[in-house]
Length: 243
Image 1 (cartoon, rainbow, N blue to C red):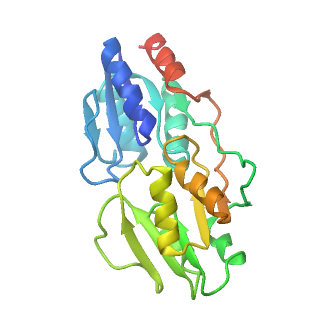
Image 2: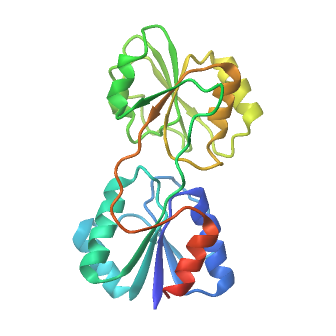
Protein backbone atom coordinates (compact mmCIF):
# COMPACT_ATOMS: atom_id res chain seq x y z
CA UNK A 1 0.00 0.00 0.00
CA UNK A 2 1.53 3.29 -1.11
CA UNK A 3 0.54 6.91 -0.60
CA UNK A 4 1.07 9.50 -3.30
CA UNK A 5 1.73 13.01 -2.00
CA UNK A 6 1.09 15.69 -4.59
CA UNK A 7 3.48 18.36 -3.39
CA UNK A 8 3.69 22.03 -4.31
CA UNK A 9 3.31 23.90 -1.03
CA UNK A 10 5.75 24.59 1.78
CA UNK A 11 3.68 22.40 4.07
CA UNK A 12 4.13 19.47 1.68
CA UNK A 13 7.79 19.40 2.72
CA UNK A 14 6.73 19.10 6.38
CA UNK A 15 4.24 16.36 5.51
CA UNK A 16 6.92 14.45 3.61
CA UNK A 17 9.24 14.70 6.59
CA UNK A 18 6.54 13.38 8.91
CA UNK A 19 5.76 10.50 6.55
CA UNK A 20 9.43 9.55 6.42
CA UNK A 21 9.78 9.65 10.18
CA UNK A 22 6.68 7.48 10.58
CA UNK A 23 7.93 4.95 8.05
CA UNK A 24 4.92 5.40 5.78
CA UNK A 25 5.34 3.94 2.30
CA UNK A 26 4.96 7.10 0.25
CA UNK A 27 6.19 8.90 -2.85
CA UNK A 28 5.95 12.61 -3.62
CA UNK A 29 5.21 14.17 -6.99
CA UNK A 30 6.20 17.68 -8.05
CA UNK A 31 4.81 19.24 -11.21
CA UNK A 32 8.20 20.74 -12.11
CA UNK A 33 7.09 24.38 -12.11
CA UNK A 34 10.25 25.30 -10.20
CA UNK A 35 13.64 24.41 -11.63
CA UNK A 36 15.90 22.44 -9.29
CA UNK A 37 13.31 21.94 -6.52
CA UNK A 38 14.56 21.16 -3.04
CA UNK A 39 14.66 17.46 -2.17
CA UNK A 40 11.96 16.00 0.07
CA UNK A 41 12.38 13.36 2.77
CA UNK A 42 10.57 10.69 0.73
CA UNK A 43 11.20 9.43 -2.82
CA UNK A 44 10.06 11.99 -5.36
CA UNK A 45 9.26 12.27 -9.03
CA UNK A 46 9.30 15.55 -10.97
CA UNK A 47 7.19 16.37 -14.00
CA UNK A 48 3.69 15.88 -15.33
CA UNK A 49 1.90 12.59 -15.86
CA UNK A 50 0.90 13.13 -19.48
CA UNK A 51 -2.73 14.01 -18.90
CA UNK A 52 -5.55 12.07 -17.28
CA UNK A 53 -4.73 8.77 -18.99
CA UNK A 54 -1.08 9.01 -17.96
CA UNK A 55 -2.11 9.80 -14.39
CA UNK A 56 -4.42 6.77 -14.21
CA UNK A 57 -1.66 4.57 -15.60
CA UNK A 58 0.86 5.85 -13.06
CA UNK A 59 -1.49 5.27 -10.11
CA UNK A 60 -2.05 1.67 -11.18
CA UNK A 61 1.55 0.90 -12.09
CA UNK A 62 2.92 2.41 -8.86
CA UNK A 63 0.36 0.59 -6.70
CA UNK A 64 -1.01 3.82 -5.23
CA UNK A 65 -3.79 3.13 -2.74
CA UNK A 66 -4.27 6.60 -1.21
CA UNK A 67 -3.57 10.12 -2.34
CA UNK A 68 -2.94 13.32 -0.40
CA UNK A 69 -3.22 16.45 -2.51
CA UNK A 70 -0.99 19.18 -1.07
CA UNK A 71 -0.74 21.30 -4.19
CA UNK A 72 -1.31 25.05 -4.28
CA UNK A 73 -4.92 26.14 -3.61
CA UNK A 74 -4.98 27.69 -7.09
CA UNK A 75 -3.79 24.54 -8.87
CA UNK A 76 -7.46 23.74 -9.37
CA UNK A 77 -7.06 21.85 -12.65
CA UNK A 78 -4.72 19.37 -10.99
CA UNK A 79 -6.96 19.12 -7.93
CA UNK A 80 -10.16 18.67 -9.93
CA UNK A 81 -8.61 15.96 -12.10
CA UNK A 82 -7.07 14.19 -9.13
CA UNK A 83 -10.29 14.10 -7.11
CA UNK A 84 -12.29 12.83 -10.10
CA UNK A 85 -9.84 10.05 -10.95
CA UNK A 86 -9.48 8.94 -7.33
CA UNK A 87 -13.28 8.66 -7.13
CA UNK A 88 -13.33 6.74 -10.41
CA UNK A 89 -10.66 4.29 -9.21
CA UNK A 90 -11.95 4.02 -5.65
CA UNK A 91 -8.78 5.44 -4.08
CA UNK A 92 -8.79 7.19 -0.71
CA UNK A 93 -8.35 10.91 -1.32
CA UNK A 94 -7.85 13.98 0.86
CA UNK A 95 -6.81 17.55 0.16
CA UNK A 96 -4.46 19.54 2.33
CA UNK A 97 -5.96 23.02 2.10
CA UNK A 98 -4.65 25.94 4.11
CA UNK A 99 -7.23 28.24 5.65
CA UNK A 100 -7.63 31.37 3.51
CA UNK A 101 -6.30 34.71 4.71
CA UNK A 102 -8.77 37.08 6.32
CA UNK A 103 -8.33 40.87 6.45
CA UNK A 104 -7.11 42.34 9.73
CA UNK A 105 -7.35 45.81 11.24
CA UNK A 106 -5.39 48.18 9.03
CA UNK A 107 -5.76 46.11 5.86
CA UNK A 108 -7.14 47.69 2.70
CA UNK A 109 -8.22 44.75 0.59
CA UNK A 110 -10.40 44.56 -2.50
CA UNK A 111 -11.60 41.08 -3.44
CA UNK A 112 -11.50 40.21 -7.14
CA UNK A 113 -12.42 37.01 -8.96
CA UNK A 114 -9.75 37.01 -11.67
CA UNK A 115 -6.52 38.70 -12.68
CA UNK A 116 -8.08 40.67 -15.51
CA UNK A 117 -10.21 42.60 -13.00
CA UNK A 118 -7.09 44.30 -11.61
CA UNK A 119 -7.25 46.92 -14.37
CA UNK A 120 -10.64 48.06 -13.01
CA UNK A 121 -8.92 49.32 -9.84
CA UNK A 122 -5.41 50.41 -10.86
CA UNK A 123 -4.70 53.60 -12.78
CA UNK A 124 -1.90 54.36 -15.23
CA UNK A 125 1.46 55.34 -13.81
CA UNK A 126 1.19 53.20 -10.67
CA UNK A 127 3.65 50.54 -9.55
CA UNK A 128 2.13 47.11 -9.10
CA UNK A 129 3.81 44.23 -7.27
CA UNK A 130 2.60 40.79 -8.29
CA UNK A 131 2.87 38.03 -5.71
CA UNK A 132 0.95 35.72 -8.04
CA UNK A 133 3.73 33.89 -9.86
CA UNK A 134 4.52 33.78 -13.56
CA UNK A 135 1.98 31.20 -14.74
CA UNK A 136 -0.90 33.68 -14.92
CA UNK A 137 1.23 36.67 -15.88
CA UNK A 138 -0.38 37.19 -19.29
CA UNK A 139 -3.71 37.93 -17.60
CA UNK A 140 -2.30 41.24 -16.35
CA UNK A 141 -1.46 42.51 -19.84
CA UNK A 142 -4.32 45.03 -19.60
CA UNK A 143 -2.42 47.00 -16.93
CA UNK A 144 -1.25 49.37 -19.63
CA UNK A 145 0.87 52.32 -18.56
CA UNK A 146 1.78 50.74 -15.21
CA UNK A 147 5.06 49.44 -13.87
CA UNK A 148 4.36 45.76 -13.17
CA UNK A 149 6.85 43.77 -11.10
CA UNK A 150 6.53 39.99 -11.03
CA UNK A 151 8.49 38.07 -8.41
CA UNK A 152 9.45 34.50 -9.24
CA UNK A 153 11.81 31.89 -7.85
CA UNK A 154 13.70 31.03 -11.04
CA UNK A 155 15.52 33.48 -13.32
CA UNK A 156 13.41 34.31 -16.39
CA UNK A 157 14.06 32.39 -19.59
CA UNK A 158 12.60 35.10 -21.83
CA UNK A 159 11.47 38.71 -21.89
CA UNK A 160 8.51 40.01 -19.92
CA UNK A 161 5.36 39.21 -21.92
CA UNK A 162 4.07 42.78 -22.07
CA UNK A 163 5.37 46.35 -22.00
CA UNK A 164 6.06 47.98 -18.65
CA UNK A 165 6.85 44.79 -16.79
CA UNK A 166 9.94 43.43 -15.09
CA UNK A 167 10.93 40.27 -13.27
CA UNK A 168 12.30 40.17 -9.75
CA UNK A 169 14.02 36.93 -8.75
CA UNK A 170 13.73 35.84 -5.14
CA UNK A 171 13.47 32.59 -3.21
CA UNK A 172 11.48 32.43 0.04
CA UNK A 173 11.38 32.89 2.94
CA UNK A 174 10.73 36.64 2.79
CA UNK A 175 10.86 38.19 6.29
CA UNK A 176 8.48 41.07 6.97
CA UNK A 177 11.30 43.59 7.42
CA UNK A 178 12.77 42.63 4.05
CA UNK A 179 9.37 42.95 2.37
CA UNK A 180 8.84 46.39 3.88
CA UNK A 181 12.25 47.54 2.67
CA UNK A 182 11.63 46.08 -0.79
CA UNK A 183 8.21 47.70 -1.21
CA UNK A 184 9.59 51.06 -0.08
CA UNK A 185 12.54 50.82 -2.46
CA UNK A 186 10.31 49.92 -5.40
CA UNK A 187 7.66 52.52 -4.54
CA UNK A 188 4.86 49.93 -4.64
CA UNK A 189 1.35 51.40 -4.99
CA UNK A 190 -0.58 48.12 -5.22
CA UNK A 191 0.01 44.53 -4.15
CA UNK A 192 -1.81 41.72 -5.96
CA UNK A 193 -1.92 38.24 -4.45
CA UNK A 194 -3.89 35.03 -4.69
CA UNK A 195 -5.58 34.00 -1.45
CA UNK A 196 -3.31 31.01 -0.90
CA UNK A 197 -3.34 31.23 2.90
CA UNK A 198 -0.51 30.07 5.12
CA UNK A 199 2.01 31.83 7.34
CA UNK A 200 4.99 31.40 5.03
CA UNK A 201 3.78 33.78 2.35
CA UNK A 202 1.73 36.08 4.57
CA UNK A 203 4.66 38.38 5.23
CA UNK A 204 3.99 40.45 2.11
CA UNK A 205 0.49 41.17 3.44
CA UNK A 206 1.91 42.24 6.78
CA UNK A 207 4.34 44.54 4.99
CA UNK A 208 1.49 46.04 2.93
CA UNK A 209 -0.50 46.65 6.11
CA UNK A 210 2.42 48.42 7.76
CA UNK A 211 2.97 50.63 4.71
CA UNK A 212 -0.70 51.28 3.97
CA UNK A 213 -0.47 49.66 0.53
CA UNK A 214 -3.84 48.53 -0.88
CA UNK A 215 -4.18 44.88 -1.85
CA UNK A 216 -6.12 43.19 -4.62
CA UNK A 217 -6.96 39.74 -3.26
CA UNK A 218 -7.84 37.11 -5.87
CA UNK A 219 -10.51 34.74 -4.56
CA UNK A 220 -9.90 31.01 -4.52
CA UNK A 221 -11.48 28.75 -7.12
CA UNK A 222 -14.11 26.27 -5.97
CA UNK A 223 -12.75 23.01 -4.59
CA UNK A 224 -14.06 19.50 -5.28
CA UNK A 225 -15.90 17.56 -2.62
CA UNK A 226 -13.81 15.43 -0.31
CA UNK A 227 -11.85 15.35 2.92
CA UNK A 228 -10.21 18.70 3.68
CA UNK A 229 -7.27 18.98 6.10
CA UNK A 230 -5.90 22.38 7.09
CA UNK A 231 -2.83 21.49 9.16
CA UNK A 232 0.14 19.18 8.87
CA UNK A 233 -0.66 17.11 11.98
CA UNK A 234 -4.12 16.20 10.71
CA UNK A 235 -2.70 15.41 7.29
CA UNK A 236 -0.24 12.97 8.84
CA UNK A 237 -2.94 11.33 10.93
CA UNK A 238 -5.05 10.82 7.81
CA UNK A 239 -2.11 9.47 5.83
CA UNK A 240 -1.10 6.94 8.49
CA UNK A 241 -4.70 5.71 8.72
CA UNK A 242 -5.02 5.11 4.98
CA UNK A 243 -1.77 3.31 4.13
